[in-house]
Length: 180
Image (cartoon, rainbow, N blue to C red; front, side, top):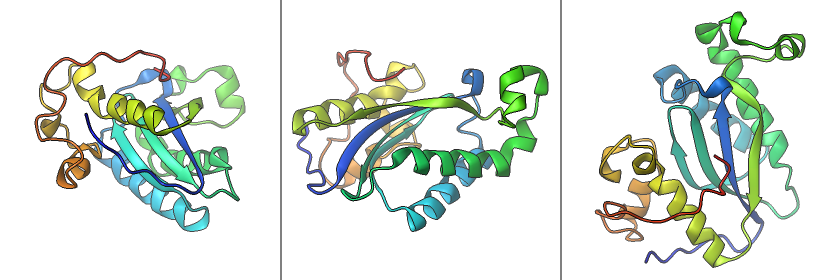
C-alpha cells in the first residue's frame, strides 16, 4: 500500500466538482487551459496546495490543503469556476440546456452549481481518498492503466516513489461515497 506524507498545517479537503448536466467537456483543451490559469490566479490571491487531482471528462476530484487561518474553500472554487466560465462559456453556449433558474442567475453551462466536499480526518482517510481519486480513470473505463491517463497527479506520485508504476492495474475495491 502507498505511504503518503500530507501537509500537517491547515485543513485538508476532498472535493468532487461536476460539469453542468455531466457534459463530457472538462478534458477539452480550452477548459483545461482555463482551469490551469484559474487555479494559478486563485491560489495567488487565496493560497492552497493541491495534494492530488484527477480531471475526468464530466467531473474532477481534488484534494486541497488550505491555510489554517483561511478555510474558505468555497470562495476559491467560486473564483475558479467563474474564471473558466468566463473564458470558455461562449464555446459551450447552449441556452436550451440551462434551467430558468440558471439563466436568471447568469450562470454558464460549464459547471453544476454546487460541489461536494469532505474534510480529511486522518492519514487513513487521506490515503483512501487519494487512492480513490487516482483510480477514477480505470473505474470509469477510460483506461486500463493509470499511466495512460494524463490528467492526474498519479504521475507525480509515481515519480516521487509513492505509487509503483503499475498501481491500480488490478481491481481495487472502493466505496462510492466520494461525491459521484
